[in-house]
Length: 311
Image (cartoon, rainbow, N blue to C red; front, side, top):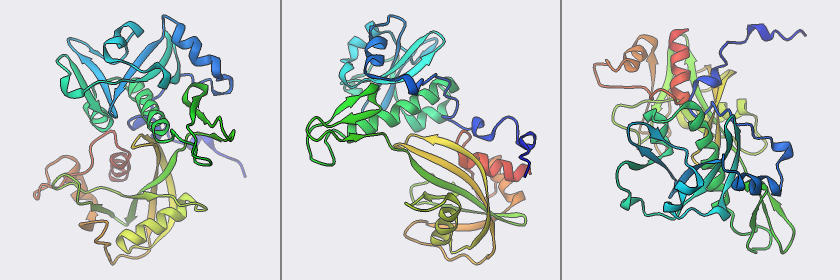
């Protein structure tokens, strides 16, 4: 079979969602213990600052998200827990966790959680992508301070991309959790639901974690049926999105419904229904008569809905 790459969409759909445009050169094959030592000693290196799961910005006339090593000192940055992200055109990038009470931050200093950062548009697409990488790695390191095999204190290695146990020599590597996020369609209708924690009127695509030994296609069929009672036949991949909550990869899929009667799992959803394409257009433009809306831009759920509506 001849593979027709010319038929693929351009730009690549994954490049159009938030957190996806990380242009840093990770140089993973050459990353070793010396890499972060050299980067910390380089005056051109710039730092992203994190505290309590949030990223610190300086919002004056120009929003600043990268800082020199000297500028980080006021936040009691912990270089021992630094994570090496990669190299930009003007120098290396490192994520630094800080010991600072965010309640004491004074303007123009502010702290954003990563979800708010995504939707705010406060930083460039490239910085947002690097921040997502940093957030996932910092969380993983913080959650794996002890060896899962023998219980001894582990230590960060090769710039935060491995944790080593000095007692039993075991090595632990960062994880990425695959999540299917899917829009099931039938003719001119799509299936969306709302979780109890959603903002009022907000309906979105269904989603769920891929389980061990499961393909993403089967995960979509299982999760869709478990949450809505709808059976899915054929499945089509659309795009992916890094999702640092805390370290997932969202796999955006379309599914062809082979049933229509909804049997909602009320432990997962508070509402689930079919929406006609014309109704979804009103939701996207925020002109729906009942105040219903779709997810905001930059989320892959929004991209899935938009691509289907415009198709």
